[in-house]
Image (cartoon, rainbow, N blue to C red; front, side, top):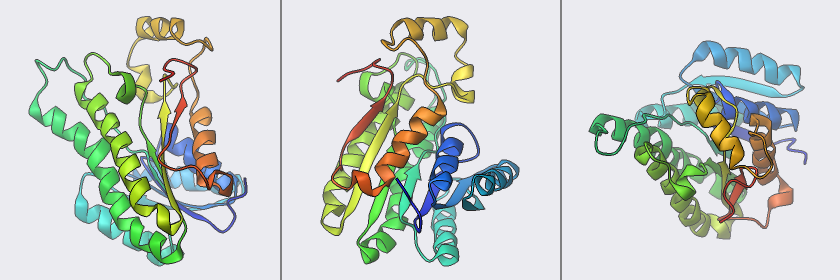
Length: 247
C-alpha cells in the first residue's frame, strides 16, 4: 500500500489516533501535514515521521476556528502543492448526563468533532476536484453507532460524521474522490484512560476479541482507505472495534 507522492492532512495529530495515523501514512511514503493546537507535540511528531522515512510539516490549528481552518489548509496546499488525503480525527469529550449537560459542552463537542470535519472537507475539496483524486477519512466512533449514556454530545457528533461521510461520498464520487469513516471501539488512548479501570474491564467483557484496540489498529485501517487498494470503497463505515458492535 504505497502512498508515495501523496500528501495527507491529519487533524488532531498531536497524540493518540491522529499521531498514529500520521506515522503510518508517513511510513507508507506520504508527505504528512500534521495539525493540532499543541505546536511542541507536533514538532516532535514531525521528527518521528522523518525517522520512519517520511516527510512532514507541522501546522498549529484550532479546528473550531473557521478562519484558522481556511488559512492553515491554504498554507499546507501552498507548501505541498496539493492535498490528496484528509483525515478528520480531531475530537474531544465533555461527558455528562443529558439532563445536566451544559449548552457550552454540547457546542464544544459538536464544533470540534463534527463541524470541523465539514470545514476541512470544504477546504480540501477544490484541490481534490481539480486533480480528480482524493481520499477523505472521518474518524467516528462505535458510540456514534450504538450510543453511550453520559455522552449524548459525543455520540451525536460521531453519528453526524457518519451521515456527513455518506453525503460527501455521493457528492464527490464522480471525480474519483472517496469518503469513508473509520469507527474505533475501545482504543487505548489518553482519552480512554480517564474512563477508569472498572469501565475498562466491563468493556473488555463485551468485546468478542477479548482485548482493547491500539491506535495502530485504527491507523492501519485509515492507511488502507487512503490507498489505491481501496479505490472502489466509498460511503463505508469501517468498524475497528474487536466485534463490540456488528451492525
